[in-house]
Amino acid sequence: MMRIRNALVIAGAFAILAGRPALGQLPEITLRVGNHQLVAEVASTEPQRARGLMHRRMLPENRGMLFVFREAALHGMWMMNTYVPLSVAFLDGDGVIINIADMEPHTRDAHGAARPARYALEANRGWFMKRGIKPGDRVEGLAQAPPAR
Image (cartoon, rainbow, N blue to C red; front, side, top):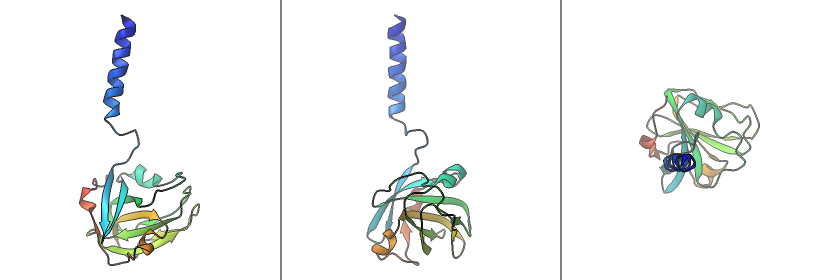
């Protein structure tokens, strides 16, 4: 009888956990820039922003990471412990791209916003350029992102 009860408790726990995101999994939103879509994981807390895309061996095409900052500032990004070559677009509070920088894996080179940014959007290196996306273009869908904490 005890085995059956334990099995039911374990089965119930698995059923509850199956409906939840895995521990550490970030929320995802779909962003649009002109006619192009990008599914972005959202890093809205300090630990999530600090980890970013570190230790990942690949990033699928049309996927990226959106960093949500508490306030607009001259935020910077670097690539320590990051294997995938990335481009980062810094965005103002309205989603307008301020500047875009290409970044090399495993470097501590700082890549910063040209003026105060509220968001940073990372994608595979060249993603923005291949699609003709440039400073002044607007990223739509940012309202779906959880607020910075």
